Image (cartoon, rainbow, N blue to C red; front, side):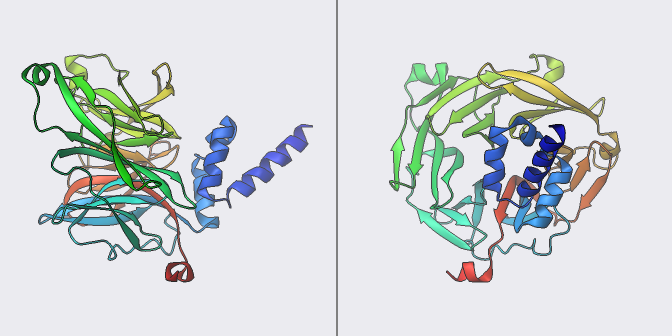
Length: 357
């Protein structure tokens, strides 16, 4: 019985190493065992070698007031990891990305918004939201890949507030764009405590919800499907010592995660959201990063590549992959510039025939 079970497990594993990311994603939701296996380094390496799926990160930096985009592949064996961004409009900034390889971009010179697919080198302009309001943050969520259906949420600041409201709340205007109707709709206003707001470039997309770190070290979550939001605390207690720590939100093995660096001890802690309904966190790792900080004192975790490897970086585009199980460091050669976004990116590499259509 055990032999048959092992053979079945091995067969499923082999199939998954040759499957689409959509299929792997569904399997992760159905089985805790395969959720764990498919985030291991060995699986991600095999999957990258056996499919035409490209995985990595888009690094956005600013040089002379222009955004520059570089792609960093997590698979060094791929021969086609050079992605052309020449098809993007001029003066464009990436404001959101998805696991399906679709980007939301904004051009500052004309204040236009585009949904872009680098795999087929195409951009689609969408109707503008109420741009007279100052944008705080954007989020893009894919509902279906074929045909492509997506939603975009925009948070902005109302221009005027009553005197009492100004001192009691931080009010955020919420708009939702649906590709199925091609319209923006206004949702209920979000009211946060007066001293709260969303940190830019902290967005994490996990299980249909978008998450941001706030000024007061809480997590703001917006469920795109249910059109609901909530605010909840990080696992670290409020203290002067913890306030000085470098805290980031990220995604780890399909779950919301928090990384926390203590610069004095040179340790980074990794906390996982174990129970999202009850907002329970669990500390998963405590990693010594002294070998990194001796070279780059201000390095911080930007994202996880798999269960064992982190992408680390600092403000001026010094980037590296760090395997915290083995201690191996892979320094990346990127152009100099102020870091202005790190976007996990995964897509199926299109053939020339597909692009032509």
